[in-house]
Structure formats: C-alpha cells, structure tokens
Length: 207
Ligand SMILES: C[S@@+](CC[C@H](N)C(=O)[O-])C[C@H]1O[C@@H](n2cnc3c(N)ncnc32)[C@H](O)[C@@H]1O
Image (tube, rainbow, N blue to C red; front, side, top):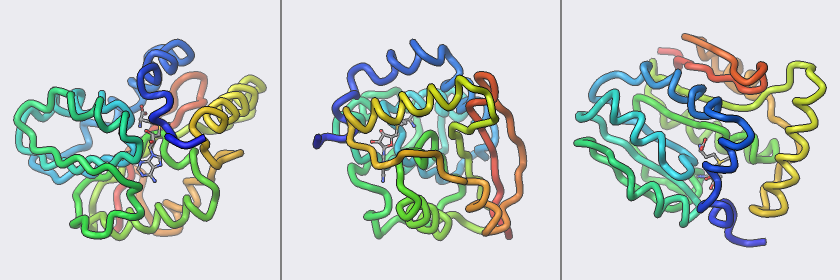
C-alpha cells in the first residue's frame, strides 16, 4: 500500500496514546533538556510534529530546526504546530535522499530506526552521523526487548499493523547500540519507560 505513514496520520497520536498512554511522549520529552540554546536541530521522522511544541516550550526562540518527514500528511500536521519564535524548515522527503543538509548540533530520531531493514538502518545512520558536528548530541528513542513476554507480542502486532497500513519493511528491532558504539558515541543519559519496552538515550558524538 502506498502512502506510508500518511495513511495513519489523522489518528496516529490517538492510537499510540491508547496503547502507551503518555509513555511515548514522556520518553522523548525526557531528552529535550539536552538541546543547547541556539542550536541547529535536525528532526527526522517527527510524525505529527507534537515534539516541535514541546521543544518550543523549553526554547521559545533561538533554535534553527530542520524537520524532515517523508509522509506528506504527517508533514502537513507538523506545519500547523506552534513553534514560538524558532525558525523551522520543513522538508518532505526521506532523510537519506536530502543531500544538501548542513551540519547540525543536535539530531532527534524517535521510533524511526525500528521501521527499517538492517541495510536501510545502516544507510540512514551513516548519513545522519556525517551530518552531526563533532561533540554534537543525538537524542534517540526506540523500542527494546528485555525478555518480558508481552514485549515481543506487542512488538510483533505493532510491526504487522504498520506493515499492513503503512508498508514498513521491518520485521524485527535493529541493534542501535551497535551502531552508536561503532562510532564511539558516549551515553550522556539513558532511561527506560513502559516496563523497559521504550529506551530513550542522549548520545554525544566524539570530538
Ligand atoms: C513510527 S513514526 C514516529 C513518529 C514520531 N517520531 C513519534 O514518535 O510520534 C515514524 C515516522 O518516521 C517517518 N519516516 C520513516 N522513514 C523516514 C525517512 N527515511 N525519512 C524521514 N522520515 C521517515 C514516517 O513517515 C513516520 O512519520
């Protein structure tokens, strides 16, 4: 089915809150204090864009934000968000195909990599790694399996649901720790949510 996440844009946030309550929001908001004032922030796959409003509550001005989202309907919703006095450039494309992005201080990827097959994970990760300045901050949130029986069941049903409705490729979770370790990222802070099923990590790139 074409359309990707545009197919679920009108009800994506309501559906995720039905399943996870506020955990998806709390896990991402937990990382936002790591954004320095006046930073250039790259948000990849920001969905309906609620994160723009949360960021703008902490930094009502001074940020330059590049917001890349491939689903047209998700991007349209994001454009309506209150960004206070920050400067946001919206780009409707897959991030790996946007070639003229300048280097950034902060990257935000939330529930992005778990959509991809391993080859795409590597391609997107390396593209973003090149865009992050030395010493830059990468805020990543994803699902993880820690051995609880219900996690695997929930993950499988979620991946199947989004494969049928949005055509996502992934059938299992990627090992993101391996990718961050490979480039010697330092963990500044990490916290789990929703019975350890969600992991939010603030990484710093090597200087
Ligand atoms: C699971 S949703 C998460 C949305 C949001 N981050 C959140 O937590 O509410 C993944 C989002 O990433 C977008 N996306 C997927 N692949 C992408 C890519 N290669 N480049 C940019 N956006 C992408 C999808 O369109 C979708 O809106």
